[in-house]
Length: 396
Image (cartoon, rainbow, N blue to C red; front, side, top):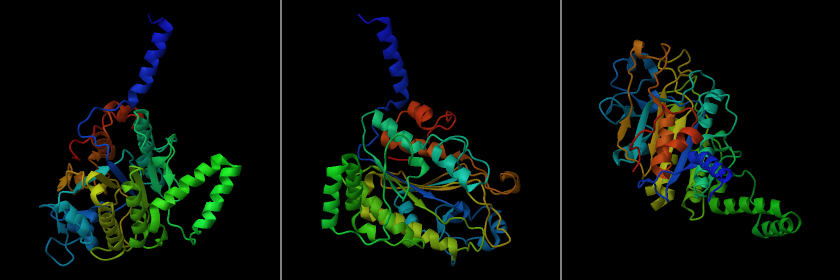
C-alpha cells in the first residue's frame, strides 16, 4: 500500500526529473566528443563562405568580393552558389571528405548589434541577454549527470566562459607564460596541501592532472592567429582522447571584429581564417581515431553587414555562418534556407537575413550525439525554445 503523501512526493520527484530524462536513441554514442569553438568579435560569414553566384554579391561586397572558383584568389567551390574563402583549404578537404557541413544564414534570437549582449544570448541559450543563470552547455551537462553520464567538460581558457557556467563544475586550461615548476617541487607542494588543507589539495591535484594531460601543449605561445589557436586545439585533443578525460571542450578565439582593412583573398581576415583552418586540421590529426566520434561546431555571435563600409571593412550584422566538422558529421553539404542578397531580402536593408536559429543546431548535436530527449532540450537546456526544433540528421 502506498499512502497519499508518498504518492504525491513520488509524483513531484518524477515531474522535476522529467526534463532531465534521456532519449533512448541508437544514434547516441557513449564515445561522442564535442568541441564548441566560439569566434568572438563576429566572423564575416559572407567572406568565410561566399555566395559567389548570387547576383548581388559582387556589387555589394566591392573590394572585399572574392572571385569565382578557378580564378586567382577565388573561392574554393562547394556548389553552384557557395565557395569557401581560399584560406580554408583544410575545411574544403573536410567538405570533400563529407566531414564538414556549412550552415548559412544562421543566428541566435538576438537582433541588436552589441557584442557583449549577443555573446550572452549565444552562450546562455535564452531569448534575451538578461539571463544570468549560466550557460546552455552546463545545463546540458547537468541533464547528462542526472541521467548517470558523469563525463565532464573543459574550457580552454583562463576563465570559464558563460556557456559552461552553472551548477556542474568544469575544468579550465590555458597556455602558461611562465616556466613550468619541476616535478620535485610540485610533489612537495602536493604533500604540503594534503597535510594542511585536503579540500584545496584536491583542487590542486585536479589542476596538476589537467596540466599533465595537456602535456607539451602548455608550452605554446599566445598571440597572432595560428599561434593563438594551435596550443588550444593541441590541449583540447589531449583532453578528449584521454580515456578518463572530458568529452566536451570549449575553445575561445578572439579578434574577429573587422571594421577596417578586412581584406579579401589576402589580408587581416584571411590570416585569421588560415589560423582557424590550421587549428581544425590539427585537432583532427591529434585526435587520431577519436576524430571518428567527434563533432566540432564553430560559431560566432552574429554576422556582418553585406555591404563594405568606408574603411574597407564590415560592420556589425545579423545572419552569419557556422561550421560543423568531424568524423561524426554527415557532411559534404550546405544546410541553408538561403534568403538571397537582393535589397528586399536583407534584414533592415543591410544584413543577411537569418533563416535558421542556431539553437536548432545545438539541439541537434545534443540529441543525436548525446541522446538527449527533446523534452530536456526544450525545458531544461533551452527554455522557451519550443519553436526551435532540432535539425535532423546533421550527424551520424
